[in-house]
Length: 83
Image (cartoon, rainbow, N blue to C red):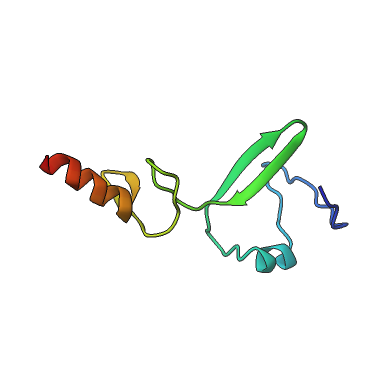
């Protein structure tokens, strides 16, 4: 893990402001969803990207019945239903 030398305080409701330099570097915009993970004693933030519930792909995905599916898996599902 690399330190970038920026320190922020947690405010009274638990928020931390991400510096504009980091938001620009990682293309994080206002209202973008963020995922949070923990690993050992670390908290990890990652810009959320919806992925296919079947294969994990993040390209060519769409929502169907509140689930994310990629076009490739959708085509495979259609083929299985036809049989």
